[in-house]
Image (cartoon, rainbow over all chains, first blue to last red; front, side):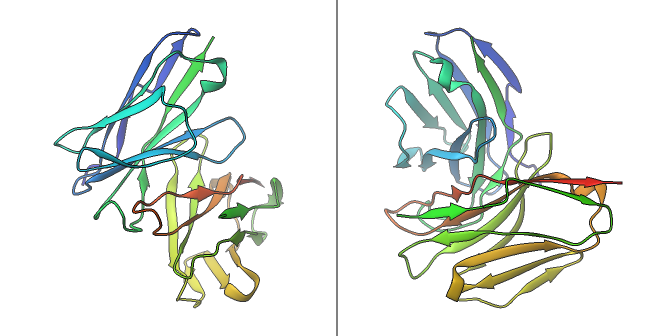
Length: 115
Length: 116
C-alpha cells in the first residue's frame, strides 16, 4: 500500500510569487486535507477536499486555494507569497465520506521558504 | 471553541527512563476523537493512536500507553523504558464531526529528547 507522497520536498520562492504544492493520497483514500506548520508550532488546518470539492476551510485567506483531481490527488496553490507563508506544508489523506472522523495519514511535507 | 494544550514544551530524559506527555483538551462536542502523532526530524507526522470519546479504556501498545480521562479532559501518553529512537516532537490532536468536515486541531507539541 502506497503512503501519502508530496512534491517537491523543498522550495524557495520570493515574496509576491506564486507556488503550487502537490500531494498524492494513500491508496483507497478519497479525502485530502492540507495543513500549514510554522516553525515550532503545531499544524494549522488550511482546507479539506472531498470528491473534488472543498468541503471545509480554516482561517486562511483566499490566496490559499486548492484542487482535487479524479484520482484523489490534490494541489495547494498560494498566490502573492508573503514572508509569513514560510512553513512546512503537510498533506493528509483519509478514507470516508469527507465528513467523518477517519484517521488522517500524513505525507512527508513540503518545506517552503519565502525570501 | 475547541482547543488542545500541551503544557510541556520540551522534555529531556535518559534512556530507559519512563516519560509521560500531557495533553488537555477543550470541546463542547459530545462525540469527538483524540489522536497522538509523532514527528521525527524528517518532518512526517506518524499516526500513533486514535481514541473516541465513548471509549475511556486505557490502551497499551508495546512500550506505549495512553490514559484517557474524560473527567479531567486529558489524554496522556506514556513511553516506558524510553529509547533514543523515541526522540521526536509529539502532538496531541482533537477532531469532531462538525460542519460536515473533519479537521484536526493540534496542540503546540512536546519535544522529547532521549539521551543515551
